[in-house]
Length: 74
Image 1 (cartoon, one colour):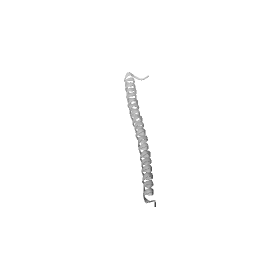
Image 2 (image 1 turned 30 degrees about the horizontal axis):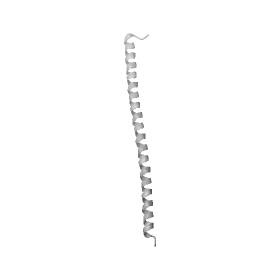
Image 3 (image 1 turned 90 degrees about the vertical axis):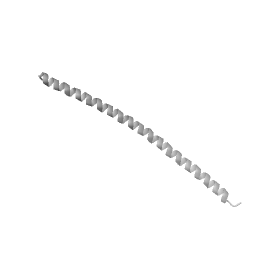
Image 4 (image 1 turned 30 degrees about the vertical axis):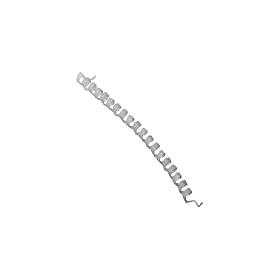
C-alpha cells in the first residue's frame, strides 16, 4: 500500500498527464483548423488557375479568329 507521500506524487503525476493531454488536444484542434484553412485556400487557388486558363483559351481563340478574318484574302 502506497504511503501518503507516494499518493501525493501519483496524484501530481496524474494531474500533469491530464494537463499535457489537454494541451495536446488543443494543439491537435489548432492543426486540424489550419489544415482545413489550407484545403480551402488550395481549392480557391485551383479555381483561379482553371479560370485563368479558360480566359487565356478564349482570348487566344478570339485573337486567332480576328487574325484569320484580317489576313483572309477577299
